[in-house]
Image 1 (cartoon, rainbow, N blue to C red):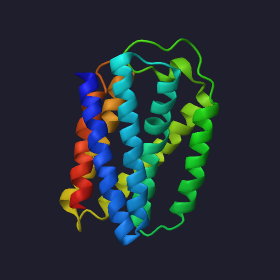
Image 2: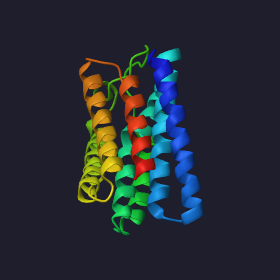
Image 3: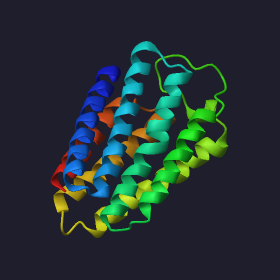
Amino acid sequence: MEALLAFAAALLALRLAGSLAGRWRARRRPELLAWACSLFAYAVAAAALAWGASYGWGTPAFRVYYLAGGLLTAPLLGIGSLLLWRRRWAAPVGLVYVGLAVGVALAMPVTGHIAGHSIPQAQDHLDFFPPRFLAIVANSLGTLAVVGVALLTIRRRPRGNALIIGGVGVAAVGSALAGLGVAGTAAFVAVAVALLYAGIVLA
């Protein structure tokens, strides 16, 4: 079930990423491109989750999952929100950050043996600095940007923004519960992307 939910989430996120990319090609609005990249990263992370749940985790799958889900999704979503709020400096900052995140994910040493069908815990396999520190800071700032801009503009787009906030909240709760070993992640990933899909379409 975990693998099926993760695979469904990957397909839905990829569908939304393609839709946003199409809108960007038609309108050339930079926030649409940032959101498309964010949802594409979300789709890659969900696909890595499905792979790990189906065939077992290994170091390559963990690197892909950590890069796409731990380092890119929320920050890129936040950059899109800042661009929507006409903060044009967010675009070059986002490009620099993506390069940094990719470099960290490729270079970070992964210690210990990664196996099994449960998501590997980052604290068991990664140093705190720079990969875990970067993920904490970038995800916090990205989430803050998404929620902050959504609240500031909620009177113009009440339903869409409320769904976006809900999607970000569900994803955060799912990550927290998975980190505590209380619940799996795939169900939260699927619900979160469905809420984001509905929210961005309405917004």
